[in-house]
Length: 517
Image 1 (cartoon, rainbow, N blue to C red):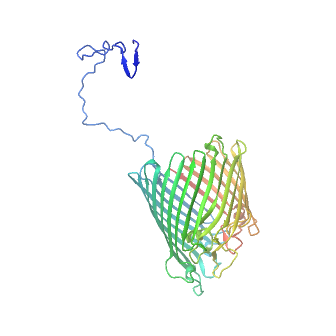
Image 2 (cartoon, rainbow, N blue to C red):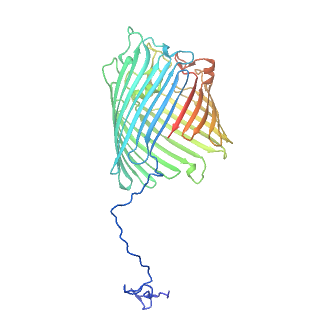
């Protein structure tokens, strides 16, 4: 091919006659001339019946199911099942579970030594024009035997129903909006053992209705993010009750948050104000949260080093169901008020070597604005034998440290958790734990053994010994045999609950099957 020369002169580009090669010998200008290009034969092609491609082979599965079922001695049953679609258009989720424990140690279920829980949950997402519409509902029921401790009641039961509807809309340039409307109904009732005794109506039965509305406006860029949030809550006792301190409650909250993050580092800050009818000595309370976190696995370090530090002022409102489900053999006789805390927490994980790492965390909380934490008063007896949940000021400082070591196919771990000032009502001052686990190289079978000792003046001096042996029949089916609180199980002894007249389940041997498909 001849050289191409282009001459640039002043503001006018000119090219010589020989600047462009002569392609006429290869590509004729006249279509009638002979051409070196290939000539295709004419064929009559019909498009009346377009062939349909078969994409069924290798199509990705979108609906999955998993479950856990098993039982054991004494009187133990577990069933937990779910069906869900988490990828693709219009995902959904359906979950059902039931757990029951009938008989504690040498005591029979007929004498009030039992507990059970049932849960049903469903959620559906419908997407249209970059907008997600989510509707969900949940139902929970709990039953607890009172072990003949209460002179009034033989069991304590609760049921709760939730419903919510949310709309999520994503706009261009990283903007988004979400609105979530929800409500719940909580009912706690007790079986009467002796109807002649005098007790409050809300000790026998209580109905609580909650309504809430949440709004969120958000923006996220390559590294920066920003949120505006609003929240309204309303709660009321449904029905007439005796000596109720708080029967209705209204609360509003507005906040903003912003931050910067990349693959391994995040810095964020948030703040706002909350106000309502039960804020303690204040009409409104400000709150804020500042933090930084680092994840070493995704950083240039490429190891498990990580840390997080946060601090600020926290204020929140617990629901009746949250508190009564958390604290065993306990109940509220009115709606709870606000809880406010100054707080700071930190946690760090450090790789000592390729096979060993240590971790440590610390948490500090101190009551603010005289809005104490709601806990069960297990050290105060009541006429009904059911403990009352009350508010109290506290200063909490807790630490949790441990280490893990990988040796061939074995994993060894040890930990120590301690509450240095205030001890939560349902916990002990110190916990020391250790465990060892084994997994075969093919991951077809394995076992684990764990030991935990609760060290406190009110704790049971017998350690918690447990273990598991598992076998994978195939990738989707796993069989396991588990022992919990084995020493108490074989000794047929009781385990006291928080130095009260009640007992908790002491020892169980169970066989489980877990599947996934």
